[in-house]
Length: 85
Image (cartoon, rainbow, N blue to C red; front, side, top):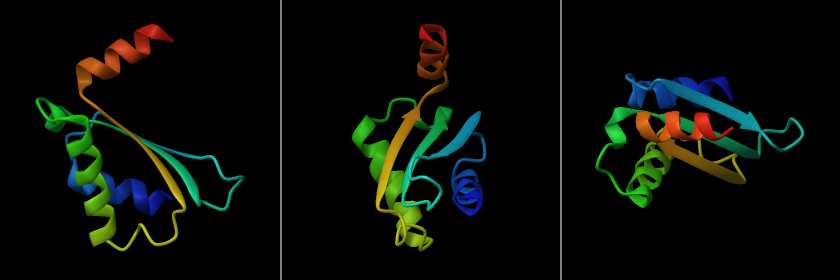
């Protein structure tokens, strides 16, 4: 999982948040990935998800993941989400 996080940070070095939660009882097959970056400003949500998925596929990191929930937010969206909790 740490390799996944480091690979995502390679693609989004300006990310203010990059976290991975294993929701599969430790086997790493069901993950939740949160990336917060100003790179996503003006980008549709579907394009954000596809960009992240394609990057992970190129790096060969998608093979062992059964399910991946992606939360790709802009900094302003992140601040709003934090304020809601």
